[in-house]
Image (cartoon, rainbow, N blue to C red):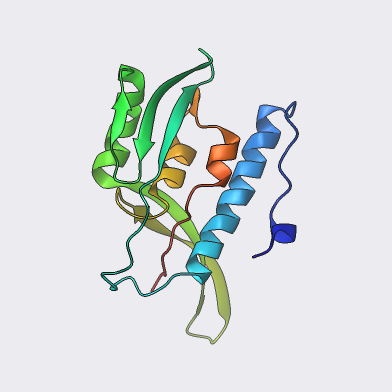
Length: 153
């Protein structure tokens, strides 16, 4: 996908709703792009890069931890640890656009839910997108995160 198909990044003075809308559009695009680029997942030579991002607390205006592809959360924030626990243990639920043919032969477009587990490309992006306010990561870092690579059956 070329850059002309990416949603336009909001300006620095954008309000929270505009930024959230952009993040949702960009995440959907990134998931779809990851599905289109999915390779042979059984290839042992297909090693994925471990990515780490800083997690920000926007109320405090400070970095409160880091998370990496493997689910290693480094934080002293008990609040961040609590909201992250389920995602680190069970993965992050992500809706992935899919199409299938129903029994009448009609093409149906729907969202299927997949769990993005630690160690999976796209985990950090999914994790950060699910964090409640005031937790987030830098928008520049989010744009550069690997995307989910999956196919729904």
